Structures are given as structure tokens and as C-alpha cells.
Image 1 (cartoon, helix red, strand yellow):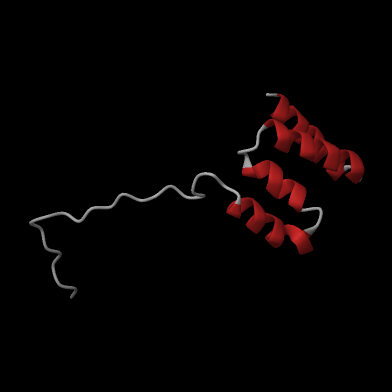
Image 2 (cartoon, rainbow, N blue to C red):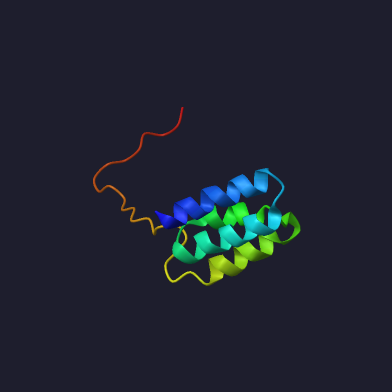
Length: 84
């Protein structure tokens, strides 16, 4: 809850041209909820030229996969009809 409040304050400060305060509140939101990518993406919007690098750094530090692993098994005994 505190992370969300910090995030909303950061957005408000950013929209009102108070970028230093916004950055401080974005960092606080990130610290309080490490797994919410929205907090990071919004903060990265301050420096779009660095956003790709920052995303890649965070992506590579993930303990769990960014996308869940798909568990797809083919159906047995059924064939797809040939395309027409």
C-alpha cells in the first residue's frame, strides 16, 4: 500500500515538473515493491535513452523468468486436418 502511494505521488510530481521529487518517490516505490515493473518503467521514462539498458539490467537480475514457462503438450491420437 505504501509503495502504491509513493508511486502515485511520484507520478503527480512528474506531471507537475518536480522531477527530483518524482525520482525520489519512484525509487521509494521500487524499494517497497521490487517486483512491480510499472514502478520501474515509469521511472525510466525520465531517461528514455537509458531505458533499454536499465530494463536489460533488471531483466538479467531476475531470480525467476520474466515470462512463465509454457507447459504445452501435444494431444495424442488426434491429427489436425490438412489446410485447404
